[in-house]
Length: 283
Image 1 (cartoon, rainbow, N blue to C red):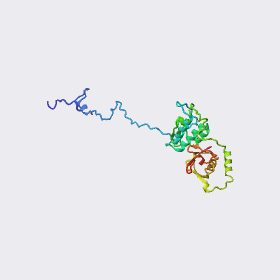
Image 2 (cartoon, one colour):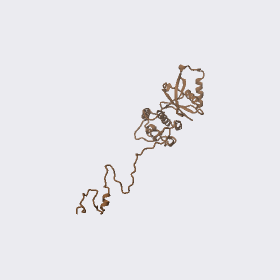
Image 3 (tube, one colour):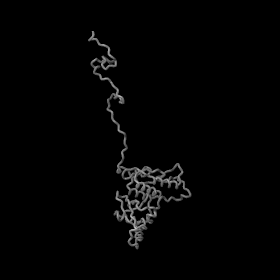
Image 4 (cartoon, rainbow, N blue to C red):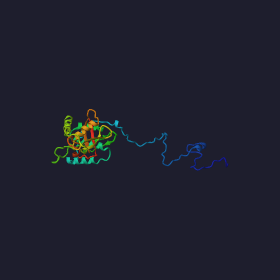
């Protein structure tokens, strides 16, 4: 009969009378056809909700979280044959061409490398502490951090000479980038007073203003006036007095990454008027 007889339907229709499992027509009608959305993945049988994965980001450690180990020399052997003069040239070019990070930190690391070459690890450690530079492993090869958490990395041949360095006829004994003929504090004080004795009051045209950046504070820079012919030892004493350093803290003057000699004037060691010197303060 026309209205009571079932007619064949398109097998692709969602309203098919039955399926392979013998579903009734009423259940088949309510079945929602499966559709695949372009770009989506099918849901698994356990219906586990998908978890959005964020890209992994490296967590920057706060300065207080950085480990700090005592400084120790870096000992290594090179596959390349280095001469001492080649290493000195490489170090000078390396430190002169740093464009990232803080220049005063690079200058301090340059001093530390030179002090290590002189075998004066204790003095180098004092300078690191005064500049708030930390070493996670104590070896500069693993990098150094400033107080803001910035990482400074140095290649092996910049940190130290390899054990198998080739000593040429012009190399002889290494003296480093700066002489370390330092006198005791008492002798320096007495000598500086002898130099000033009998000179009277210096005229304004004989004075030069020196801007010193102290390592134990964030600023401002300290400006002191000394005679053009007075040496670095006088500058150190005036910085100690005007900065009110507790216990007359020990001060070393550095300029362009080199530790200046106390017994010579600033201009004689390359300093130019208006340039800033670094005053490294430590006990």
